[in-house]
Image (cartoon, rainbow, N blue to C red):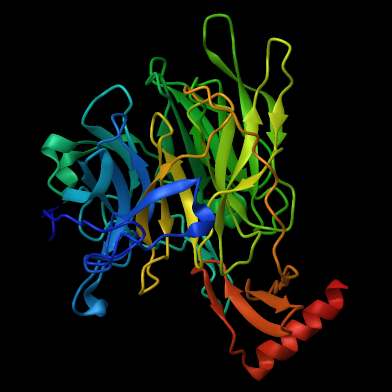
Length: 447
């Protein structure tokens, strides 16, 4: 079993190892600069969902290690940490990559403890899940599925002791009848927000809870129907952002909720909730800018084959200033393939995300300097964030097959019909005769 990897991935700006630093993405100029690929398909079949340590010198991410024989590769994501290599003020790559999770386990949502250096938390089954799809949902004859293994609990790991075995994992929160994951600790270390997905609720379940570490009391903060998940505390700990499937159509939307505390500081629940997106796209993975005035998130607005990262207002207002939620959207990434799961470091000078920008189109971890001036930056430089330009071609029409979960896409400009799998983010342009017939039937019904 792999427990430690020592490697350095040094790449140029927006390039693979050995390529020229001259390779860039012109449409991201003035927004993202000095791109670097932090994980490589030489080591990982796929990697992603990455987060910075409080000091910004380490990252935690999930990945599947690449094997000479793909049949020998593990079925589930494993959890890793790595040190960032910084030279001349720029991130050049990673080193000292270490595995934290036991062999055969399923893992997700790693997070550095903000007040206990060298400690991380993440969701882990610790042991191989017996029936990973039992508490999830899979439509017949489709790859579309969400897996919520009941063995998934929230664990704590001291990095200095980590050796990739269960012996170095301490259970923080567990429930034999529920998937527990998507966990984040507030900046002051006092609270943890997480998702609980009960086995019997299937795909329609999933609520957010906030645990008070001092009292041990958990409070449900999303009582509405639908799967609520992917939460993060605002920098001041007074709000949370998350995505929700309130309509039950798999087209996620972005929400912010204000937490309600009593005079003693004990959490009572949620005061007000704000919906920042309301459209026919998949909007997910929101994350706070350190100022607390903006969110970045992932959206399928430009097509399911080309998820991109957008920035939007999430200003709570106050002292005579109105709240601003969901206004002044701005596109940040502009590259072919998937760009998503974006995060900032603590001072907002760097953005890290999952992308399919390398030649082999595998999902890997990328990082760039974030240079877009925003209202409220410490440097005092101010620039309005404007609405993104509309796509040059008409937006693809889409319809979902309720029987298979697949999305059929129609491009009015090229008259091309394609099919998208929301689980794998793969788009096929070659449809079977039956799929073509089904797509035309569904588009007629949608008129």
